[in-house]
Length: 408
Image (cartoon, rainbow, N blue to C red; front, side):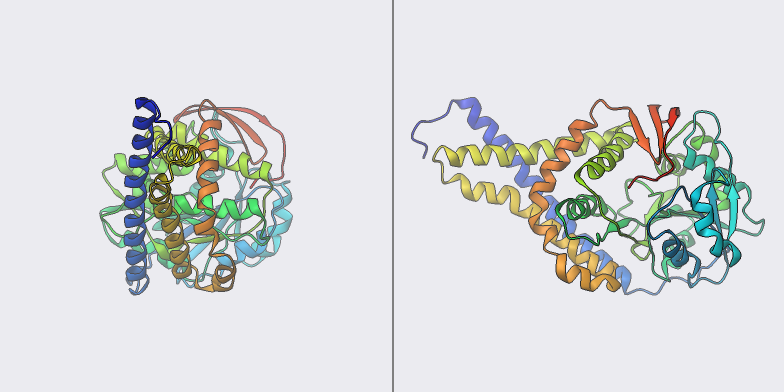
């Protein structure tokens, strides 16, 4: 016992934070275990013989490391009938010269021009490309330019649409940094926590369809009025998610549609990227943001309370602190194991670095909290050289267009 007993409110706070963190950690561990099992079962199944014609749309901007190789992985899909459109705002964009060999190989380039008023540039590019999709296309698929995919990616992305109840299908990304430095590895761990929310099966719909790997029937795109949801917005994926769910349809995650993202980042680049992600989430999905913020307050509060208790001599708090932290670390390890199933071609990288999903979970938790705090009152973000003020999910104010070089 402590030499001097703390006042009652301190004990109440200790047990409140510790108890909540233990419950959340065990629930997270259980969910991560079930997700791993669901992914293993899904990956063993043959995709349905469902291959409608597809238009695959990829917006680009500026010079980007690995751009041509990323786009080539999309172009060389094992899929019987698809076209690929690369959408860019300006024909003078440096990316146009880089993708010229792919255009010569059959990819179509769409020069979108300025986006509609008070609408993000990416959405303007997507709308222009959708308008130029071939008449025979049955499914519209969307990908980002900074990811690399396996040859069966498009089949996996389209497969859930065989179910008429599914309005949109999605994959998600995983970061495989080339440089084993702290901040690139932290970004992988930080992002893996979001990936842990993507579970296959109709009983576990994801919180949103991710814009770097999402698809929906063309008929659904029109019936759900996706263009109306996009106008005035910055976020293509959150607004598409809202449109599909407003139409009474489901979102389904496909583990075969995951995307590998490489590249490094500095501390400043990481925080700029992470704060932007959570700022967008707070504006477009405030309930999801607040739930995440509350969870990280509880986790970090439990860690701080446990450390303070131990520092004052309460050694019995050590097992409680471990019970509040180790389940979350084990959940991270299970997410790392799921990556082995999702990315068999990345086995060498995971063999070297899978430890990060266990050991870096604790610092990542504190970094999550810092990013939540930084995004708490923010509405202005910079994205791919443009500065936007997010007034509401349906109202965006473009501020400046400053750079052509894309951000991470």
